[in-house]
Image 1: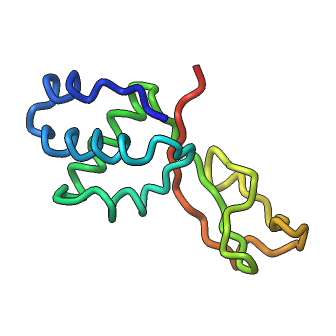
Image 2: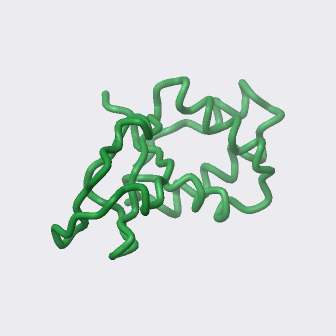
Length: 119
């Protein structure tokens, strides 16, 4: 997925060097991931302070490498529905799960995600 030169970020932000190293390793290990669940990323990037990870993610988003989107986990299947939303306020009151069963989004989990920014 990622063609990010993390070494350049290490030079620009040396205080975050361990975080950039951890992210580079994570991306090498997860080449096929298209959507990044930031909660999962936080638990899988070992030895990194959550605040440093948040700063690094913010830098990647601000540089236009990733965009923050939101997914909805259907209560019936515990999987993400196909639609993604730019903000949580764009999520409609009702959605359909992968089996076309409609559900109330008030009963669903909203998940912050990262995806590679469109070129």
